[in-house]
Image: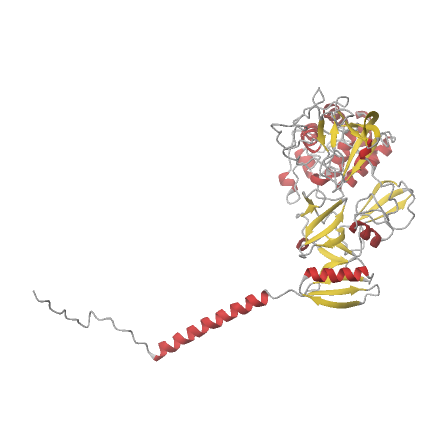
Length: 544
């Protein structure tokens, strides 16, 4: 059958559309605009990715500033700055394009850059753990260096050396009298070291003064600089030079570091005072004569009134110093008169986080219950416990909690940001000093029976040092010292044991952790403490 051609009608044909001249013009304009947009994006990307320029300057004492050179590489700029330092050429610094100091020879770190409800986190240099502080309680730290990327700043503050994000702090020239009006320092008055602290280095007034104890050596009447309260210098610059070289050889007391007795005394050291004496101090000396019924309360009202027995009972049951707990309560609750003390029977700031303290704080049925909870849960099972919030190892070997490092345990004393309760308990870097001063004041009024009653030894920069069940390294290791810059312990005696580094003397130590009756294992969740049973040993050779 012959095939026939299909007719193609106009309706089935597809013709190329025709555009008007106006449509063609609009099309060209659209293409042109798109090209311009692409060029603009490329320009913006190139502009923003162009090398940062770093300005190396030298600050001179007469306020003159001289520019040495510019660099596009921060590490190179640091290298050039070091050459100026090696030549002892003024106070060299590196500035960014906005004139902010990124690195400097002699500077101060300003932590007061956030609202008071915001903490600043940092990384502890010696342990690698995270720490935190709040510039509204202590504004300044010693500037030590900036990393090669220009992203982190190394500092010294309240006994800790750490690294903080540069974006979280400011670096000021220590000689800039406009920006640096006050910094932390000490003065020797009547043989006592007085700490002057600031919460705003741009203002002339100091926020607090604290007595940190009797000076062990004569350091003169001039201003003293220290960012740990242990080693002191007359010259800020000499302190910075030593800290950068990880030494204290040029300090005024290099051979006799100072440790505030009440700040580094363990909670395991029982007070000499009884409940009647504590109540007499609260009523006769502090002037509190009854419990409050509302907040705010009358001047003679306090939740501390007649609670001496509650503190002593907690000490006898849980093995934590009654006067230390009272000092902490005074510091945290404004002498038992704060809102959470009155409305929630919470003297210790439990769960009173900086961003919303009143809303989050824990509540108790009465003050005695709050004191017992502090002694039992927060101290005995928490800040005093080498196994705090860690799971027992299924195969413990030398230690019952070696798998997971304790969460809050950094030593059983008030301490500072380098060690002790202050590391994890408070964002105030000087919380330990403040609580210690309340203890000092009470002891002085009551007769000084606790002062120097105990012997304290401090182990410095020796992480995870073993504490033994007997004066022999072959005996059971009961726990290790925490990852902290120092570790203070109460020495209850000396014994002769295995010779370690040509020294057979061992220290008998009041254990922070609770031991079982056989004294061969830590109790992970203790419900009491026995001062006679809970003893550990450490070689005297470990102390240099």
